[in-house]
Image 1: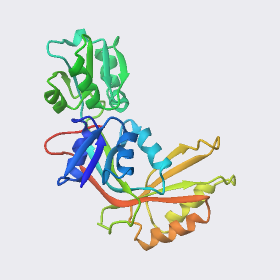
Image 2: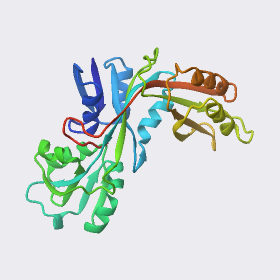
Image 3: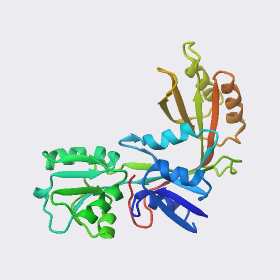
Image 4: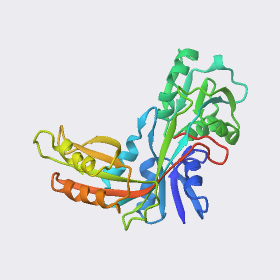
Length: 288
């Protein structure tokens, strides 16, 4: 089975792939989340693995955008949460006092902003597509005054020197990664499952969303996560991605979904899948 994922090699999405699919026949990095998803949608790959949310910095917008845009065509078939840690790295010989720019994924920059503000108050922060992309570009160019934020193992992979360890705001931060496939039948329950739903409604009656979600609570289905996403064609209207702690095969959830459909304009099943919490992946800690 072939997997696409957010690259380049050395991203911590790659670590998530190893946890979700240790026997994958081939794994190929892509520069952005949409590129990794499109590679799967085009038929060249069975799965795409991308980051969904960080416990400190929140949702990963490109992933949520792909789920909304391709609802009905994509399914989440697995999810893993991995502990994250960060290091500041630069070309060999660079001192901390030399750093003028810090480059990384926006979520990593957000998680390390306090450390950067304290130790590098005059440094510019520059976003990159991934933590590993920042490190790879630094290794290729090695410009004086640039540093990257990534996982410690990335420094060894790209021949960089670690200037500071454990620079994140929290030492218990995690990132959730999802495995995406084309739409099809759901896998069987595993006992540790979640289900994701995409709800869209143009109805203006007060409390529409509250009433719809009440169908879940009446059937004792717990909401694990809810996230809004603006609709491009209707100002002030939103899609809602709702994740619940149960498999769609659970009768209470199936009944709730049917009742919810009657109260909204559309409801798409984004998948029922095993949810894994794993602090360590082959000895590495990981980040989006």
